[in-house]
Image 1 (cartoon, rainbow, N blue to C red):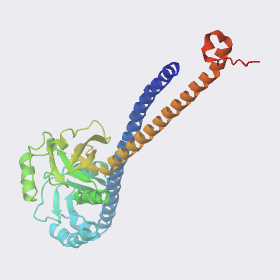
Image 2: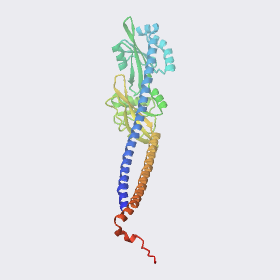
Image 3: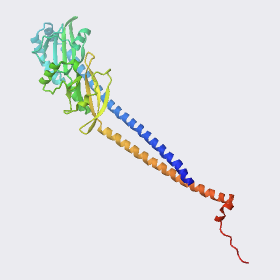
Image 4: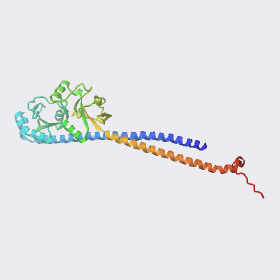
Length: 361
């Protein structure tokens, strides 16, 4: 009975302590693995952001080089100085075709010294309007090349570069090149295998003009789908509206955001948010990235199962080892104490001694 009580006093606290350690271990392992998962998602989002910045910078440098090449043509400078639209169109049309084919340039402009458009080589029928975009204003203010992303009235983004042209210190006008960047974003999607969505803040759009533009481009549109933004591009055709309920279009800073996970078509996704600023440093849009983390999540579950199994086996082994040691220790105490008890109190154990044998003489 004494040995049983001893085992209870040792084994039960040992089991309780093991359970506490096991639960704490599970908590910290899960927290560590979950942190690793979030860091992986955040790193992929940063890689996407850095890739887009790098591509846009490269495209800007290409357009800048082309603009400086155009500005070296004396015939173009003469036509710009005299506001000769026909001569500008004749000279710039072959250039536009080459730029479009080689570099996917989609916009080609000439503006006079007052920023009034003289010619859209890509759309010759439209001209005569005052250009007050941030890139044009930046070129006017700094007298240097100005570039950046501009949001058009149709909700499309164009990377623009504007170069002021001078002759003997006199401003002749401006030459502008542009490239729509949605194709660049879709190319990045193919590289990273993410699902991408572009949201634009409604405060920067006119509803009627935007709806007319979407209709002209044969795109689906729904102004009332979201409260503060419109969805202008998506790589998944069927998406639940709950996906964008917690997306903050106007973030307080330029940092990346991470949102909760969501399950779509039996796949687990985590989505990161990249703020998009225009040339005026206004956050006009948000790029939402859906990253398939199904395999990462399954890997996390497998590691948790392995950890739990190993912890359980180790715990059972330790309890079994302690049980065996206690049993051996109890038997050792019993066999060690029994002879001493006989020597110290022989009268109390007379019944244990054998009967004396008397031999007859």
